[in-house]
Amino acid sequence: MSRPAFAADTEADPSESDAFVAAVLERMAAVLPPEDGPYPLHEPHIDGAAWSYVKDCLDSGWVSSVGEYVRWFEEKLVETTGAAHAVATVSGTAALHICMLLAGVQRDDEVLVPPLTFVASANAIHYCGAHPHFVDVEPVSLGVDPTALTAHLERIAEMRGDVCFNSVTGRPIRGLLVVHCFGHPARIAELAEVAARFNIVLIEDAAEALGTSAGNRSAGCHGKVAALSFNGNKTVTTGGGGAILTDDDELAELALHLTTTARVDDPFVLAHDMVAFNYRMPNLNAALGCAQLEQLPELLAAKRQLAARWREAFAGLGGLRFIDEPSWGKSNFWLNALSLDPPYATRRPQLLAALDAAGYHCRPFWTPLHRLPMYQDRPMASLQVADDLAARGFNLPSSAGLIRPGTLPIFDKNG
Ligand SMILES: *Cc1c(COP(=O)(O)O)cnc(C)c1O
Image (cartoon, rainbow, N blue to C red):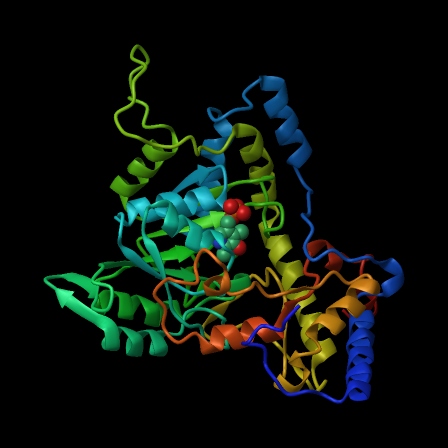
């Protein structure tokens, strides 16, 4: 297989590299003893009232999209995030799709989005017939870089009336989809200013960021609309699921309508007034979600402690950097990440193979979306930082369950 052209590129001495792999393995073992492995990248942590809520749901027969747990889950999300409204959906991807529609994204629009994200961020844009327009990230939060974004828009944007157009493609730039990568808050306050200056709708992909905040506001409460995910690998899970957050009363109502096939609200008429979607979260999933949200403070505390262990373990080891919480907010530490220094980056496959063999299921960052076949011909800014980070980074086992007293020896000894 040929090496991607964007891989960081200094050959390290192989013997030195073996010593490096051994040093990384030793630090891993200090946090997670190999004999207690293997350690998946991220496992759900099911606890508390999960069994009783789900059983209640089964006993009642209300297992589908109508039922009290869905409403209750939404109320709990409102409490947790401070958003005025939450609308629960079948997945984070479905929530993102609806967010695009609520933001007014139409066929042949463009939506600014970073390439260092899960593919759903761009897919949701494509579902609307619009084009992802890729913009670069910055190395602290791994989120969109407001300085680079401003420079890019100053170069290519042209205001026609109050609509921002891409002067190169002639298409309207309707939205900016900010991703809070791995649960670290993006530079959302500055990004909101850039979006306002160019009259671009700010949308948050907070799929990875339940419990994350920037300033004193939760991720998902900075833009017009936001999407959360409750997939099995996220901090809080409903099996599969998502939610739309918004402060706008009308958009919340429209979100509910669009996710429930736009059914006309009349018990004696079975009709629909728009082409819409069957995207409503089932009650069964929401029941699990209610129990999970009751555990959120404990989950976040455990994830924060695990991150502290990783930070401590890798401090002072040359050749890599722990991607840490940005100064401007709080991370939920969904997935801990390391970034290899350039001389070591080409050894990432070897390192990941050694870690895997030792029971540590780490994984490389996503292939940046502008490198995927369906998105390589879309509009894009210089994406040097995203390419560089994608070639050097990998995620560490990050399950909250790893930090429960008794499951992590180092925690019992030192903490
Ligand atoms: C998980 C995730 C999604 C999609 O969520 P699903 O619930 O899996 O559909 C979207 N964006 C990002 C950044 C994600 O990590």
